[in-house]
Amino acid sequence: MGRNVRVIVVGCGAFGSAVARSLSSGGNEVIAVDMREEAFDQLGDDFDGETVTGDGSSALLLQECGVERATHLVAATGHDATNLLIAELASEVFGVRHVLPVVDDESLVEVLEDRGIEPLCPHRICEEEFFRLSRLARGTGGLR
Image (cartoon, rainbow, N blue to C red):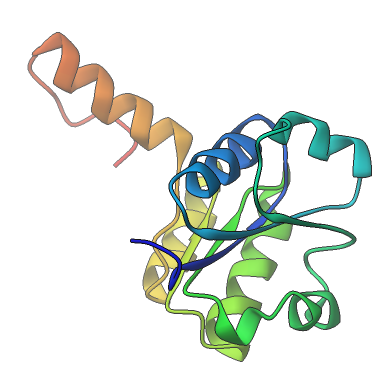
C-alpha cells in the first residue's frame, strides 16, 4: 500500500492499537485516536504515526485529523453505538471510502451492511474461522 494510504484508527484498545502498529510498520500513514492518552502506550516505541487525544465520534476532531484525506477509517472503540456513529460520519459526511467499524451487535451489523459499510464482527469472524479450521459441516443455526 505505502504512504499514499492514510488510515485513522479510532480506539486504541487491544485491536485498534494492534492494527495501528501493524499499519504503521507497513509504511502507511496512521493517525491513532483515543480519549485516554495512556491508551497510546499500547502502540509501542516504534509506532511511527500520529496520536490524537479526544473523542473520535466528534466531527470536529475527525476534521482536525484530516478525515477528508483518509483512505481508510477503523472504528475500534469498545462501544458498538459509538463505532456505528463514527462509521456513519466517516462514510456519509466525509466520504471516506473504506470504513471498517468493529460491531458485536448483529442488528447493527445489518444496518451497516445495508448502508454499504462492511463491519468487522468478531463473532462472525470467529465462527468463520472455526469452521475453516475444524473442517466440520456447517448447519443453519449460526450467526448468519
